[in-house]
Length: 300
Image 1 (spheres, rainbow, N blue to C red):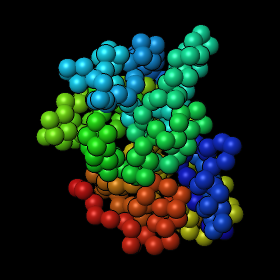
Image 2 (image 1 turned 180 degrees about the vertical axis):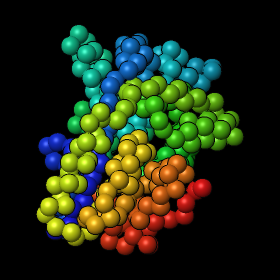
Image 3 (image 1 turned 30 degrees about the vertical axis):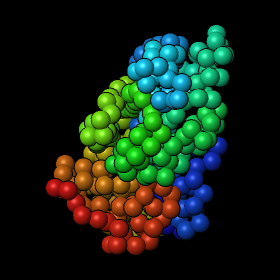
């Protein structure tokens, strides 16, 4: 079967990309990014001070429309759009749980969390968060999740800001669009962004990718695929590909979504051969099966 190089760390114990793509290709995972947690003290403080808890405007509210025990609470919920942010939160929770189990029990039971996809939802459920409180997971993109939040907030009479746990690089659509649209509905909601992990390229990535490509050259010449999951590391991968001899096995490129596709073209004038309509194994399989249909329009 033709090789498909996935520029990401393989998930454990099983990786859904491996499960699906191995039926038609030979998946090979090459880690591109390494992550390190940051700002744990900020999130830890919010949890310990019970500042993350949903509250609405109940019938027994005070004159100002807010329950007395809710006035000190800062956030009605959280926004998490990446697996790495979940991992950072998990580490913080483990640290707190060692000394204060009750706070974590309450957090898991009561916290509303808006997420962008099923993988993040599943990870949060494994941590123990209530499935009914994990919302928006069918959105797929930050823009669609924004619309979900804008609709969900007023319909559930929610009050309070949102805590957005994120990495250094992320779309600004959600933290800008949600407050603007809710303000039109006379709701003052701020989104506080806390960077909980930093990302850098694995030092040996170029060497690792070159070694894999050289090894595959010895096994045949059937055209393969390389899937890009993030703008980070794209430059290194393209350097390796551009330096290859034209007589060696060739590879088509597929991006996980429009952000990486546009970055590839804007920075390197390289047009991806395909783009996944949805950031999922199914989206990738669909893209590489019919690349001209799903490549989409470039933002230049």
